[in-house]
Amino acid sequence: MWRLVCEHPVLITLILSGGLLSAVLKKLTWAAAFTGCILALLIFAGAGYTGIAMMTTFFISGVIATGWKSSQKFKNGLAENKRGTRTANQVLANAGVPALTGVLFLLDIISYPLSVLIIAACFSSAIADTVSSEMGNVYGRKCYNILTLKKDERGLNGVVSIEGFLFGLGGSILIAAIYGFNYGWNMYVLIIIICGTAGNILDSVLGATLERKHQINNNTVNFLNTLFAGVLAAIIYQILL
Image (tube, rainbow, N blue to C red; front, side):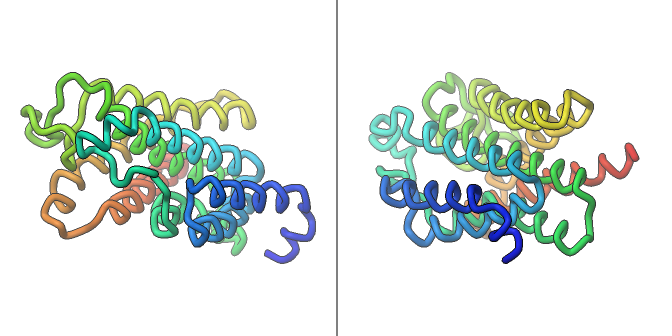
């Protein structure tokens, strides 16, 4: 890790500057900013600048989606807090699995192509979940329970809309496009979209079941949906070898 830091001073400057700016603008708590910087280094180890681009895209998209019509969402009780400042636990929930993937690569447990694919799948799921939830609460016309497909209350865990799903799909496509621009437009681009969408669906299922029963919280749900997407990508990768 120390060698990584010494060999990439520009990277370190970018990561520290991004963390500092995020904390100053109150998009992240100071603890979350510090956590994000550490995770970013590990993600860089596993996916290079492409991984940093994915992490940055996820973060910026999340900030925009959370802030979009935030007053309306807050008024309707659909916002976690008015400022949308993310905590260290939230950062770990969304970027913990990609960072762990970087550790696995550093330990020579997985190959570089696989680590990049897993990290991409994780962020595809994370961005799909965040964007679909936030934008679906604003633009969703009809909201349904993911399990029963019956109409349900907007904003409840496990409640989805067609509009929200499409926004989430767009987020997954965005992450897949970053992969495609850097590694070519191959079948893995489609796999990233599929895994991100699958992770987003799992997020809603967990929300409608375990989270509604208060057996797990939202951070755990986010961690599990990224883990699922990453594992699914790894399984498909091994099948296609």
